[in-house]
Structure formats: C-alpha cells, structure tokens
Image (cartoon, rainbow, N blue to C red; front, side, top):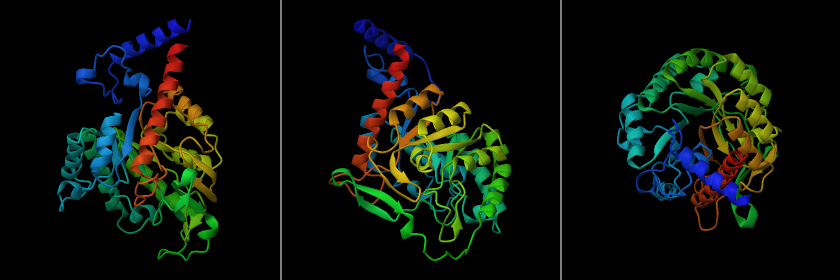
Length: 376
C-alpha cells in the first residue's frame, strides 16, 4: 500500500510537471527538466511563487544562494540609481523597465514591488500635492503592467512605518530578533505633523482607493495592503488604522474589486489576535490574498518578538495547508528572520543565513501539503 502511494505521488509529480502554470514558479528547465523522479515545482512549491526580498539592492551573496535554492522570485523597490538612472523618476517606464531587466539578468523574476514610489505623506495625510502624487502612482501601475509585474505591496502608515523598540533581542540560541514593547514607545513626543486622528486616515485611504482601483483594474494590477506594524492605536501622535481584521474588511468594502486585496503578513494578523489558518481560509475564499509574508511571532500587539519560523505561536503547517486548499498560487516570501551566528545584523529581520533556514522550512511545508493532497 505504501509503495503504491509513493508510486502515485511520483507519477502525479511527473504528470503535473508537464503542465504550464501561468505566473507559477515553474523554474525546472534545461538539463534538469525531464530528469525522472525530479519533483515538479508545482508539487514541491505547491504551485506558489517562492520569492525573496532584496531591500538592499543586488546583494550578490543572497542572489547566488537563492539561485542555488531555486528561489527565483525577487521582491523589492524600483530604485533608478540601482541601474545608473540618476535623473529618471522611479515611476517612469524607463526606470521600471531597467530595474526589471536587471533582475532578469540576475536570473530572477521580479514578482512584487514593495514600498512603491509616489505614495507618501501627501497622499496618506491628505496634504497639498496628493493629486499629483496619485497621478504618478497611477502611471507607475500602468508601467509595471507593461513589463509584466502585477502586484504592489503597500501600507497606510504615514510618517512612521515599521517600528521596533529593540532590533537585537536575544532569541533562541543567541540569535538576534526584533521586538516591540509599547511601554517604551507610548510617551515619545509627537512628530512635526502633530496628532493625526484615525478618521483622517480613513478619509485619505478612501480617496486613494476610489482614484486608483479603477486604473488598477485596467492595468491588471493587484494592490496588496500590508497591516500596520505594530498594530497599536498610535505612535508619536500618528494614528494607525490597518490594525484589526475588521478594519481590513472595511478597507476591502470601500471599493470591492479583484484589484483591491491584502498582503497576508501572518505575524501582524496573529498579533491582532487572529487564528491564522482560519483567517487564511476566510480571506482565501474571497480571493483577496495577493501576496504572503510567511513569518512567525510570539506575543500580542503591545509586546511581542519575532521568532524562527518553527517556534512561534502560529500553526505554520495548517497555515500553508489553508493557502494551498483555498487556491492561493501567488508570490510568497519569508519575512523578518532572526540574525544567526556570524551573520550581520545591519539590516535586522533580513539575515542571509536566517533566510536560508526560512526558505528551506517553507519549501518543506509546501511539499508536505501538496503531496498530501495528491495522495488522497
């Protein structure tokens, strides 16, 4: 019986490997394409697009390791200076095309833009000049579409974005993790913008979505809202609104559209108190998950720390199973990994060695849920 099941899995893998999966991480090619017994990426990666973040540009060490791991999706920003275009605006086609070509030349496919240009304080706070900023953002979406990039991960955190009170807390075995304690942040002085109430941010978000989503639909672009991180009510007078599951539902209801979706950043949603596998199933059935940050945490929104993928409070296997069973086949990447021994903590959360561990863990879960499905 067990032998028959193994044979079924192997035959299923070989059969599926012959299928073309648009947008999938179908990276098996060349001399390895038809090797008997090789696991198809549709089985191995559950049809999802394994990706890695490159917020430090063309990090050749990480690029080489990711090519060796067969993790060929690149996530990052559009920075014209990366490709020697110092006078070109990042939303212009010349910049978008040049950055896309540069990643192609590295053997990687740019799948998602995180931290899009032309989306800053003017738009999020409703300041003078926001219409021009939004117009540039719309042009940016259309230019991304022209080069084959279809997903933008963005957030609604003006002035103060991702925030931690400790970037070098000792974790398992002495690894360094990021952490947040609201007691250390709640009495900090306001920024130059003073007190920004929640309703102001809801109004500016509605204005943005109603202007942008129709154009995103035309361009075939998926906007993926990232949760506020952390999800406290305010930091230094700046309110935060993408802090609860209900608020995400409110955001989606402002302009229901296939282009209006979310980045399922597991750590943030878990810190909101959500059960991640259940929430993935709920949002997955609605087809609003456009991008996944696969990470783990320990604690609650007022006090927490990052963890290795295998030691936090999220049931990671059940989460991966939920993505797979609800049909998510989009880009997914590890996020906020610990800094491990002999690696640099100059960019907390994005240790190269920690990334290796995380990608192996994620791929193991993908293969497990995919093989389980094919063995039923």
